[in-house]
Length: 125
Image (cartoon, rainbow, N blue to C red):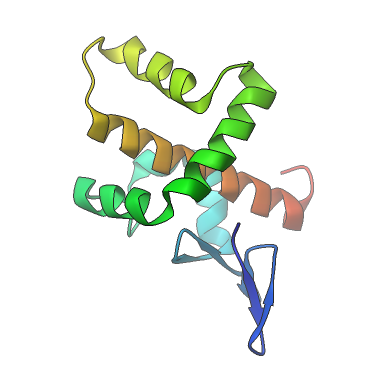
């Protein structure tokens, strides 16, 4: 779960200050989150472009990502995160790598968290 810091107090909704939010250790302004919601992570978002960065992020935040995505996928698709992502990757190519799986998981997590944060601020975004 992301944290909110106001005058060194840690809160729990992902906000760091006026219109500033943290997801997986990366700071975003509200407008950046709106762009992610509208255009997705594949547009190229600073800190989430290179495969090596995505791998490192996954290694550092694996339990946060997998716990969140597993719950989301179970609630919405009645399947685990693992089977959902494998299914999505298989639409493009039956032979995909663990790195592709990791990248998909990280990008999906950020997109979903961005959507939650924008909806918290803007209502039915």
